[in-house]
Length: 133
Length: 127
Image 1 (cartoon, rainbow over the protein chains, first blue to last red):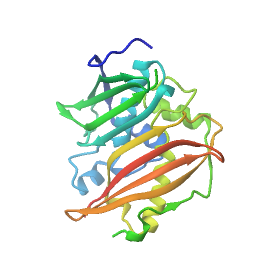
Image 2: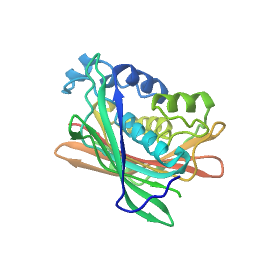
Image 3: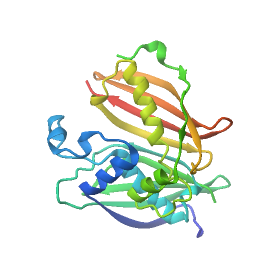
Image 4: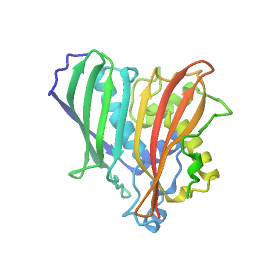
């Protein structure tokens, strides 16, 4: 793992989310809530369209951290608030831009503050992780 | 509305889920995660959310009205294939804001002898 210093901004990465990936995630996670797959159901409960599982977005951020620090097994704490939905229309790859800032480096490890932005809007709030050195 | 007596109570998981390599690999693959030797940090949700759902539904909450508010993981060690994990669920808090019922549940994923991962989920049951 490379050296981290407090205040350091880490390179962003774009993920592209489409309906097929939401189906894959639903199968892998067991979360088959139809608002993540079925447009009619999503609209019937007042959503603009199908939305990604909050845990899918958070999971992608987890993969970003894993790549950054050289292994998901180093992640000790991980938290996020689901502030805005990621809307996924049919036949569209929705870009999610994930980035991080090093908040603190201590004996406990590296504390990261994470950002996930979709269409200019932050979709996660208070997203943080502690990664062992 | 949730019975307030349930807040603070822990319901021990009665069945253990044996974690397969296939489950870890499929979960990792769906997230674009290359490391499949251990589970991604959010994998624990696949067990804890289901356990929370059973408990909260049995307590009368309507799962079709639920929105995930926030999520936290405390990972003592990564979950690996072969782990047999039960999930003890604790309702840590429940409150009503503008008619919505906001419940925070903790899931402790345990082997026979060891706490592996704790998850905290805040679930909003919309009015």
